[in-house]
Length: 351
View (cartoon, helix red, strand yellow):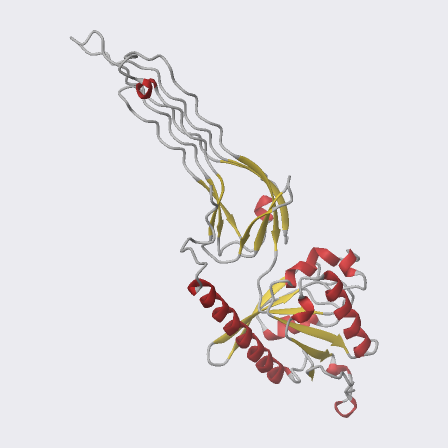
């Protein structure tokens, strides 16, 4: 089961309490205070794990709590800090504060680590309060409680190419043809009910990742059909590939409706580089395949069943993906070299 949303409660560990103790040794009848401080409570981190691909692990487990700090002990012994807790998430997870609605973290790179709640500070033992005028203090502090937050997790798939089309446009067939992915394929709408990812391998060790989402209906930006549930999975794609069914209504009308839905949804999706593939050419005799006019669009006529036009389409997709990857690398390098760079990693929460 593909799960791309979850709400969890994260609680950092409480700090251990300080110890009340006095030194007691033979021949030392009035030993001074020696109560140690309590240990810090464990922090909670969100960590991007390459072994995770969905949020299904949070379907039943909703609360995560780090270990509390150990209480202070006599002989000036400080309690052990609570063990930190790491929560593994898939790349592409966006984290929101459920109560305030504010964004917390955008986790996109494997190994990225984000401190989401801090453990409470340990309380001070009575040895800390010893002064020249108070040689036998009987004062200690309790540990402070750990931070707690209710988080909303949303997974947005990370892919190079996003497939966009109406139901039964041939997206799953295309994905199964060009990659090792095996999505469910059938001759009826909404065969695909969850996003699928496939890796396309080209000669000379070239690769790119394709995301197939359920078909879009008119009104999808308003939540109609599967709408908003899956449109967000193409927010991170570099290139869009519109798949239009040659056997259905006029391809130009299909494309106009799809672009309208993306424009209404926002997130600058209509500004992405795009290609158009007219699918199901195998359903026409070789000399009767229609060639609709789509002014201003780079168009390919393909058959995912027979393989017609696939090689040239994949090569063109690679060219666009490579160009966008180069832009991202250049932008990243410029950001790191800029005067505003602090040298601090992007995943550590300030506090």
